[in-house]
Image (cartoon, rainbow, N blue to C red):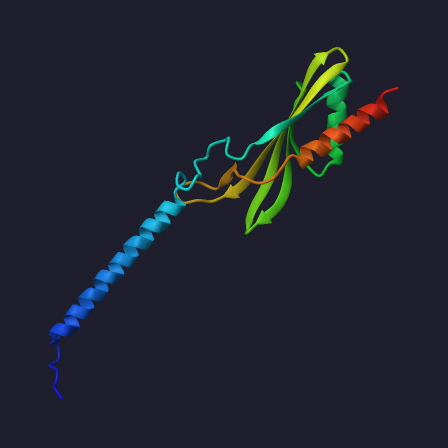
Amino acid sequence: MAETVPGFVRASDERVARRLSVRSLAALLAATCFLGATGCARVGGRSGDATEGTIAPVSADVDAEFTAVRRLMRDVLRDSPVEIYTRDKRGIYVVFADVRRAFFTPRRLRLVITIRPLAENRSRVTIETFPEAYTVQLLTEPAWRPAAFGDNSLAKEILDSLQKRINHAAP
């Protein structure tokens, strides 16, 4: 049996050690590139474009004057499972509705409700739905960003409730 001298490495052991260090370095480089590419905000369709998660708006013409529609919309929103964020005398409401979490990611729907007078006793109500997810990505700060989920069911429910209240309030 061959004896090894302390501090002396055989040639075959040196080649094996070098081969392992090259493989480890290549694996580390590949993992770094993969994590950097998947975490970047501009890779994989996550460009932050506001049109990414928009849903077609829902609109209806109602037979009531502008101030009455604005007041009734406020009452409908107070009775709905939404949080009123902004309400404006010009007829603009911004509300948020919580949606279930998806793998620890909070999600919500942002609804922008616009009321416009068409005539003295006629108004148009338009509800735009924007799904959002609270995301944290590499190279970006945590924020609510556009997402691709949801539908217009909540907007339709709000419009139906408004129509019922207008019909009930009409003499």
